[in-house]
Length: 510
View 1 (spheres, one colour):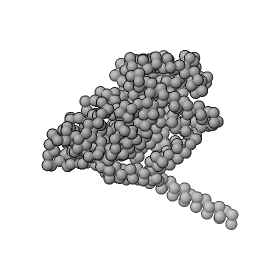
View 2: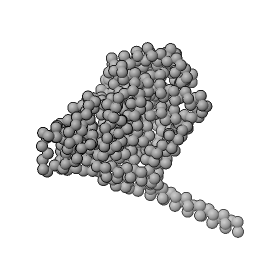
View 3: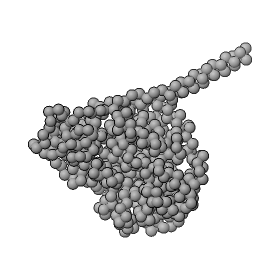
View 4: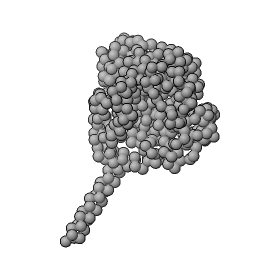
């Protein structure tokens, strides 16, 4: 009797496991729900609209802008611009027209088309710079440059909803230990020596626009990497490596990311801290960095960045999340509803790890002061003439760019300055400012139509009535449809299976 019951139990278990495997496999291969991109094939015009001139920070009222074949065909005073009878007229009275937004620090995973890319369009982000490259071609989890170029081509051809991915980077060069994390990659991924670093650059040359550096690359390897990148016409971007001074990094990198490096490099112990790079002794003592901050040292960094033309991407949202990781404003953020629960779980694991380092009230207060000091330094950098770009490095594509604009205003930039950091300045960074970043005749029709003035309150950038991407009009109904689609995908069990399948196949040790 016992053996018979055991046999039946094992058979039932086998059936359940088999059924689960079949369902999981079916979910992995289940086609993505279709999201039809907006396609506008006839001319349209925003009539009697107020244009936000992000270059001068002024409003230009009573204007008409005509869009046809992906371009702004005419822009001028409503009284003088003739709108052809075949052109669809959109009432611009009481509305504000400005260039669409850029996010200059994103991370695209292989499943980005399911959630992130459509959501960017829904929030008026039509161009992005991606800062996460795959280590090897065909990576199942991290999107590769080939993926990003294909997604961009498909978006421009009307085959999917998503922004242009204007540039992408290599996987991060972060010194010894990377090969162990990455699995089956060449030894030079450790970038431990100058020879390794040069081989690393050559591995990515021809596939990416920039080489990304991270915290632990040694100084001599870093300098060799920067030299080899120049030989191949590649930019160097990313973190200020721990072993390299900010002044040195400004001379080597096109952009420096994250405000925290300014605090690391502007106290009397900066040189000693650099000497500990790559060892267990290196530690971000936030209390010491705050108490011993030297404004003169910060000014020297700003002067070097201005002199070298180095761009600065503060990504203040990342430190905001760290600072308030124990509060509901972060943990129960309603925007997390755009994320699949698997990604929510991974994100909460990260902020819990930050809390676990020291959950004491004193440590929490210090981290909040550290975040606020970062804002203060960004304001000082801006006043010193450092060129600032808006980038999120955060978790929810699209909405978070608007929140990063709020952070820039908190840092002391005007709303016009913040808008410039997300429109014209990114176009200038890429040398594309004759095509993007202005509402002007001949420019690409990437536009944002708002219901309220963003120069009065930067939060008005979220009051979106329409988004134009490459000349195609997404009205409020189309944007709502994208929003509903992403929220539905975020609750989909088939999406969960797709994400999980890519994650378990990834060779990277997260």
